[in-house]
Image (cartoon, rainbow over all chains, first blue to last red; front, side, top):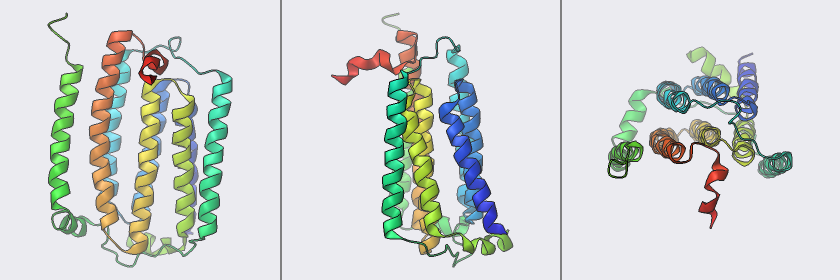
Length: 167
Length: 109
């Protein structure tokens, strides 16, 4: 019965991500993206990756989505200003995407990795286990990512600041 | 919770691969067919998330926590990327009064 939960949530995430792409209004796109991320959180819970589920919930559905919504509201885009590509380009893009998915699925079918997913260690995705990994072998990348976040913060402030000399 | 995850053993790994391939492709189609810069950004986020889910699935399959640590780093990177990218979009909008990426077509050459 519980494997059906996976297929149900997987269908939902595919539907919502399609709606992200095909929604006319960018605000609707952001809202569907939030729903897609919520289904991904459910996937993480089903895989018993509880730390990632919480981080996904906080970072993606909290921080990143607030940023997107904030910028959309700030720019105040109307539907008339929303540009759209010519139908020919759209059809070509969809065909190219379909070719990509056919190639990927075909190659993975040839590899035929159909062993069922078994959670051998119940505590694999818990904070305790991941913390030991993060502060052990991955200590240097962890510290470097703090530098990356600092650089991104400085860069974002610098980019969005108005040039006082020219203005 | 424990009961639920032990019963999850039935899902084959290749179904996770198919799901992630489909969602990644949806992101690629979004990048190819939309002209709104913010929607293109959201498509990139979709692609990143598909890869995250696949890394987690393989980490559970191989019983190796390194995959989930990679996902954590990818999330930190995505947060930084979104902050800088949205700042660039705001600046482009301030200079051109539009977020149509075709305005920026002189970047091509």
